[in-house]
Structures are given as structure tokens and as C-alpha cells.
Length: 458
Ligand code: PEP
Ligand code: CO
Image (tube, rainbow, N blue to C red; front, side):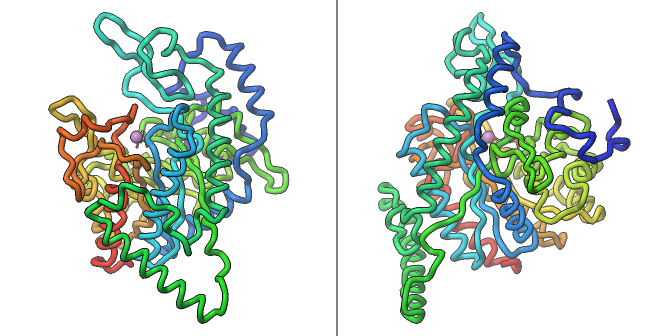
């Protein structure tokens, strides 16, 4: 095995399968390798879900976000589920991202790059390979692309046919979301189409409605002056992202694009490397370094600055703007200690990166009644500290990353409605991490606007 410093980044040495020579964490063990190979072979012949042009366009937009000309809003479920691939659920997810982005466009006065954790976010890293209940030990649930959450030997055994189901559900999801984003549904002249019924009774309703009213007034004014509809308002651009965790699946979705002269993962626009697989010598980084897509890396509180700069060299050897997004997820308690040295190291390296804050994953806690939750106040606190640290260091926070859903769930405590630990019993549906509900997501967007307006960075 070559050392990272000896490793060259020429296309000749890298292939979509070169990760196989390196240790790969968080991979399932399938009982039947031949069955897995059959599915992978089949997947590799199916049409891509996205195009190289879209991936390149996103890369350009992320470059602008890195330089303060756009703002990245990345969000969606912790884990998508096969049984949630339904019109109502998907439309609500799309609506909440649209609403948040509307607030951000209006409040920050710059275009927002919308990226969903969507159409492929099916694989989850776990802290243990197995789960024990009473006397029984079974493989951990690793996301619907691998196994089923029911605690039985049959459900928990990794099943390769799920890879094909994940591809099909990703395609169905993306098709629906593309239709919504390109049709009249996303029309800025008619934001009432994206109204979520229960929001009418929210404590935030009037603040949100007044933004919608101002936008409509400005549009009416501009369209009157222009004497006709302004092109470009009827549709929005929407990109997909997921954690590139299940490497055989990602490899099967990787294609050589002749006219671009390089390899792209065409299963998603923006694949990312999770905190648990961010190791320079290992398989996930090896796989990711050869892609032409923009890529992202989760940066946790225990990542040494020297490892981060090594990772940056592997993932963005040409130091191109827009190629690499660093998503920091330190936790509200650790961010003030951990983030500044990393920002300084990356600045000293002269690396061109887009800094994004994920204030969710470092702030998960267990309640007295046994729920995994996150506190609205703590999430916002990490975000505000991250913003202030970037300002103090002279770097730029160009986006945010949230786990949220379009349903009226009760998984995170706090927010304008003051959800308590007791309320979590009402509508806790996540199989993995607690998500912001619609009200909390919207309140977060309003808080981000306040934060940027109070700072000097807007
Ligand atoms: C996630 O984004 O769902 C996740 C597992 O994040 P991280 O890798 O940052 O822990
Ligand atoms: Co998560």
C-alpha cells in the first residue's frame, strides 16, 4: 500500500475501484458475494441519476458561496427510508427547503444554492457493528440500502437487492423533485402553493407571512415596471447530496464522461465523506479523490489540523474553488476550542474551500425518557459561535447543513413553540437522528438572517 505522501493524483493510478485495496470502514458483510456482484453489475449499466453538467454547475455555485456571492443551504433527512418515498412526504420536504431558502434569499440578499440530503441518503454509519437486545445480538441497522430496522435475523441481514431498490427510489424521488422544481409549484409568484397547513397556527406565521408579502410586493412592482413576467421566477434549481458511505454502490454509479475527460459519481451531485470515514489512507478518501464532482468532507472536533490539511491535498489537489466543501460539526461546547486552529491551518495552507456549519451532529443527547434529541438553543448556539469565529479569523461561513423534515415531528426540543422532552413522545418518527420540524427549520432560517444582519458579513 502506498503512503499518502508518495501517492500521486494522476488519473492513471486512480480508478473507481482503487479504493478496494485500502481498508474500508462501515461496510456491511453480505452473506453471498456472487449475489452482490450481480446487483452491482446491473447497477453499473443503468442510466445515471444526474449529469456531469449539473455537477459542474453546482461546483461553480459552490465556488461563489466560498467567496460570499451565494449561500449554501444543505438539508434533509438523517436517513431516507424506502417507505417514505411518497408524494406527500417528498413534497413537504421540498416545501420546507424552498421556504427556508426564500427567507435566506430575502434576508441575506444573495442567491441560495439549494442542496437536499435527498435521493440517495440511504446508508448510515453506526458506532457498533452489532446491536444486542435481551439475549440476542444482530447486525446493526445501517440504513435501508443495506438492511431493515426490524430486530429479526432476516431483517438485519444485509440484502444486496436493496441496492437496486435504493437506486429505484432515488430515481423516483429525483424525478418528482425535478418536476416540482421545474413546474409552476416553485413559482415565486405563488408561494402559497408551498404553504404547509399547520404553519398557519405557528408563532412564526406572521414573520414568515410578512416576508412572503414583501416579496410579492417587490415582484409586482418589478413586473409592472418590466411590463411583463420576469423570466426565471417559475422554477428553482435544486441539487442532491448524500454520504458516499456504501462504496460498492458509489463505484457502480461512477462513470467516465467522455466529453469531460474524467470520472463523475452520477448518483448524486455532491457526495460527502462522513466524520467516521475521513481517514487519508483509507478507502473512502481514495474513492473520492478521483471524482470530478464537487465533494464535501465532514470535519469533527477530534480531527487534527495536520490530518485536515492532508485530506485537503488529496481531495482538492488542484486547489480549485468550489471543488471542496468543509462541513464543520464540532458541538456547541467544543467549537470555540476546536474550530480556530483548523481555520488557521487551512488559511496557512492557502487552501480554497467553502466553509459550512452542520450544527446538528455535534449536539445530540439522550433525554431522561430515553429519546435521542437535540436542543434548538444548542444548535443555534453552535451556529452563532461558528459564524463569530469565522468573522474573528477573517474566513467566511458560506453555508449551513441541517437535518430536518417536512413533517410536523417532535424530535428536537425547544424552538418558538417550546417543545419539551415530554413532547418528544408525540411524533418521534426518525429511525436515526432527531430532525428539526418545519417550524424549527423556518425559525432557524430566520435566526440565520438575524445573525448575518447583526454581523458585518451580510
Ligand atoms: C450525518 O450527516 O448523518 C452524519 C452521520 O454525520 P457525521 O458524519 O458528521 O457524524
Ligand atoms: Co445524522
